Image (cartoon, rainbow, N blue to C red; front, side, top):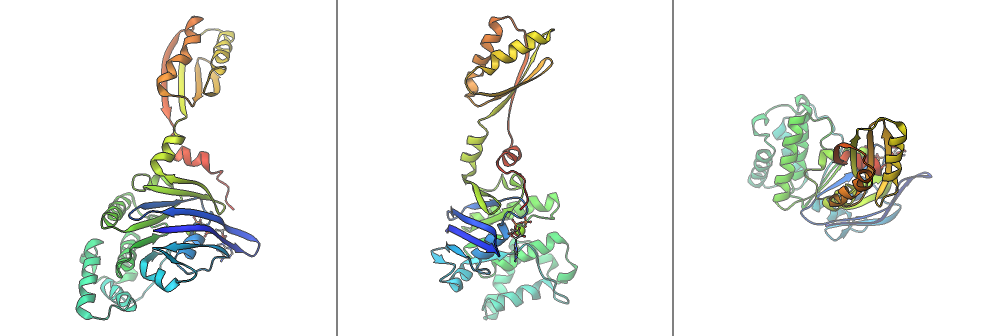
Length: 313
Ligand SMILES: Nc1ncnc2c1ncn2[C@@H]1O[C@H](COP(=O)(O)OP(=O)(O)OP(=O)(O)O)[C@@H](O)[C@H]1O
Ligand SMILES: [Mg+2]
């Protein structure tokens, strides 16, 4: 549904987006993840035809953003990372204004569409409230309702969950799932991977304008969480015995690092879980008493930190 190839944008000599390529299938919730300044908003502005790429291009539902920007605008609903302020306009009037600007001129049709969008985003009860008096969470829902008016196939949302409280985030996530179930493709940016990890199906992680990782979430986390952190507690009384144990562990297959701290030893292990017992064999052969053995896999946030250097460009 979205196809991005070699997308590049420079501001003077600074390359904000650098030959970015990825694909988004239809009916996916696709995460566009990266730290501040990674080039997310710049990429999104090119996808929604607000910014001309310097090189490369993207196709949305088969339409090239450079050749057919008008067509692309019909297919996408874009929710920017900031919204303007509208004084003296109620929720319903705001939606009515945008429905007209989307050329939904028939009054009855417009009313039905607005009612549907308000019902979906739970805005019915506050339809007569002034937009300028809404809380952040309500504004977020209103902005989403606005992007749904012309029934776009693709939703492009730039950090929609920023600034929402935990309950609003949960509600927002379930709303996105509902929209996905309605057949919409959702492209959503965030700088926090774990915030999206329970809803996204695929993702690309960007840093300094470059794609660092791209693929299905399951494949990525499986490949990366293969590294297990093992902690063993030994009942040893001399530093020599500890050093000997570390030495015995270091020489083994799939052991990436061994760190000892007194009786506790940490091992970074990249092999099969079922083979962990084999690591212990040499220790048992020289009568090292193992008191405890535990393992933990890296969580998504750690994976993200591993992948990105955390440098803000
Ligand atoms: N109009 C512009 N002129 C010059 N530099 C720009 C312009 N727009 C963006 N940049 C630069 O491009 C880089 C990427 O910015 P962008 O807003 O795309 O990042 P982002 O990933 O959306 O960050 P954030 O998470 O903070 O929203 C930044 O270094 C920014 O300063
Ligand atoms: Mg941004």
